[in-house]
Length: 410
Ligand code: ADP
Image (cartoon, rainbow, N blue to C red):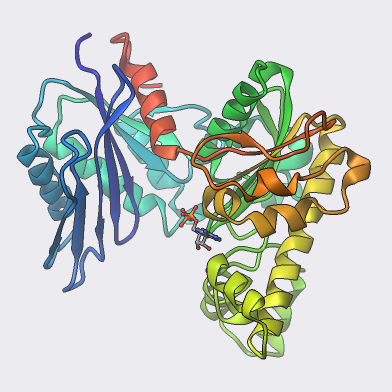
């Protein structure tokens, strides 16, 4: 098959992010973002990476996802990379929730669309937007395979002991309540790249992956398979995040309902959008929190407390997953905070020498976009920084599925 290009689409509720990749040589041809869809001040930013030209930005209303995708198609056409090109092999879509059923990337057909729709109650914010993205792309290129790559798929290997909550089984099953986990594309990519960094096969290594972006999650990966992850039914569980609380006693919710007289929606907003680092100190950006701490003064104390709570939770998960795995070959940091915030990496690993974990100050201070080790030479357990690349992973998985022309729906 000569078509080697894959368009990756990540459709959020009010945004579409995209990248066009050529899987022949792994190059990135274009990338961009449409933001604030449906508002008066939508913005499109397009980077023509193939030509190395300047990024183009345009403001103006973009009514809906269909208009957004048409605008993206137009930008791509200006670079001679239009969606009508015979070189386009497939469109890969990030889909947040694939439930138990989707354990791998899947070519979209009507049954697949119906199942993604059926999962809306467990992913009310994400799956509708993902569906709109797929349907819009289908309308633009009905002849092209559309591939859904699920955030949950990598975690479907978790054993029941990790995937189930200890609540009444009948109630849980009736409402499909279990731990699904998210960021799976990133955990899959980063755990594999970590094995490569160690010069070993993914099947030979046990890795703890710490994906620390605005959303954050940890996973325990045993011989290439996920055996536990910190997010659950929704992305709210687990680590302290930019605006999400992570773990809380579920009785906090009853308390806020009964004593605080808050509605379910208010509590949902509180825990998902007004908690985490933002709720603790008023900032959700780790750069700003570090600046406040480093500058000292009155503003530093709440920032320091937020940082300490963030690190305490992170450390607890490292310890927990160390115990889950029994033997650990590497702890790896990724995503915006994990890749850039040396103080977070240093603090999270501090004091874990008896587990064979340590960070070398000089290596940790190096700024780089490359996968790298930050543990001292000869350390029993590697500590690494591996930049994530969810778009590349989606493109790889999409292309692998359609390359040989056997893109039948699963
Ligand atoms: P997401 O994809 O979840 O939106 P990212 O993985 O892009 O998030 O991470 C975004 C976060 O990364 C920002 O909120 C910011 O806190 C953090 N970040 C980015 N650069 C730095 C830096 N140099 N130092 C500390 N934190 C950083």
